[in-house]
Length: 400
Image 1 (cartoon, rainbow, N blue to C red):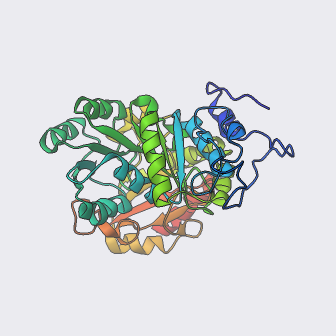
Image 2: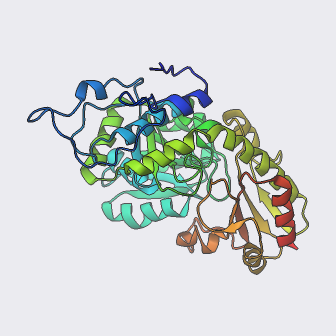
Image 3: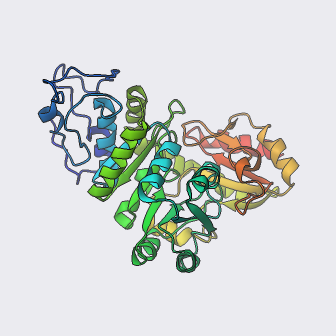
């Protein structure tokens, strides 16, 4: 059996962490344990406790198997891999990114607590806080997470229990200084949670920069093929991991084994895909920045992006997400979204295929009329790994 060292390179961990050959058959890909229950080793004795607990790293915390809502070997393999990639003591896989977010907030907050969120957060995150958590007594305040001093002032004013950060943000690609915000949070006795979906663990590792927990929609870059929905949390504290695992089991928000298997398959090629996403994203952003029908481009890889220096410091690359404002206004932006040939009109992101969408009417429609409302002329691109010349020509033709 291969012995995995957390010091191995990212690409090695992505392919081997949690993915030892099957001890029964020698299969090099972890099996799909499509099972709900397990034969017990006597009354009250979990099945295979000693074997299950012999994972290669701290990411696999399994004492045995009794019921797949609590633990499943395929999901455990994914969790061990994600913990290694994020450098956490433990990771947990969920049925969706929103299920992961909900679990984290309920585990660390209680009625009366306050949370700081990005002023341009993902629409689903805003909906969770505004329409769900507010009824539970957890309040929130939007703040520009790219402005550390503004976050510090908001913390002093509101006494937040949790600082929730996306970096880059969705959809305006703002950049937060993770290390600086960790200091702000911890000096006030709060926690820092970082949504790492846009960057992926290949480009950015928030736990190493001081964050307490990392959130992913594994539907996106980790899965990478637009064929599975899932979410994940990775944490640096064992006690927090236990609280999250208890709540995940209690409410039944864990992901299924086949979803875990598909995500684990996607993770194997994450590094090579992200290299291509970054290359293509940079070239698309450069083309748009010089196009007469584009008023403004949001991409942290551009030297004039206000968060460029921070992004260069804490990221390996700048990713494949590009947003821009159409100089022709909302109608022109909407029309363009329907004119592309290779960029498919659709929500989500992070797949090998390129996507285009109009955030104000699609992914961020839920923030309309709120402080998080996005520009009506904004277009968001998820730049895939197709031939870059074909992608640029498609955008030029759609822009007219």
